[in-house]
Length: 344
Image (cartoon, rainbow, N blue to C red):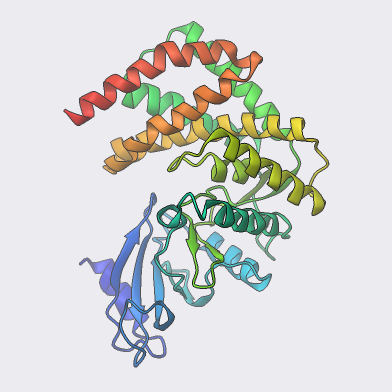
């Protein structure tokens, strides 16, 4: 496959029970990480998740594996459903993990089971938010600089690179004002551990019906509603507004009972709406970057849903009326045109 794959295979075969292992590609993700499945000797086929392990390939020069290792070990020790680490070589970026299977929440969802699965996801999120920082690895802050960098992706990659729009000084000023409002709102929320990508492609339905959590290496300490809005206003699947509202209120009550905040329903919903806008500004820019820079063009399909969340949320915010009107008049038609061009 490549020299790094050969290096990974050699390392895997040094592990007990894996002397003859043949790593089989499982998937990549939106980063430079890759994942492979290996079968433990004498335990059956590689499709048997109980008899197999996952090898993470995380090139240290591109994806430092240290945060994943520190967070995984800490969260696993606290009983969270994250992969156990069986062996690791952080210098080369290889980790041997529990195999949590292939049943992503996204693929398992139906109208009949959505409430039960999302309630499980909300319960696990409360548990994550109650954790302390890993020893010797304090979670970095979700500070003003990071919030700014993320929202800038919308301007640079979605508007500039994908839509190829040249903004006027007035439009730049509108974005600056909007970003400042969203940043201030985010920083005013209670702080908790934040997974930072808690959604239907990073949750796995386990054999016992509970949910396994993956892709948490970018965790930070930040706003209490960030992971909630990532889940209920998922960039990969959309739900009716009344369903979203019910899940938000369920989480508000659960997290309040856990002592994580004291917000009433209206205040909490306002937190969610504004936090969601920051999240979806970032995500739409990342999707454009993944397509244009990394050649992962499938992410273009997720941009309309993501920007529509922005349109809906800004419509409910009087302070963001100008942004909403601009988004509707300037960005939505350009998105339609760009999508038609991409499909032609």
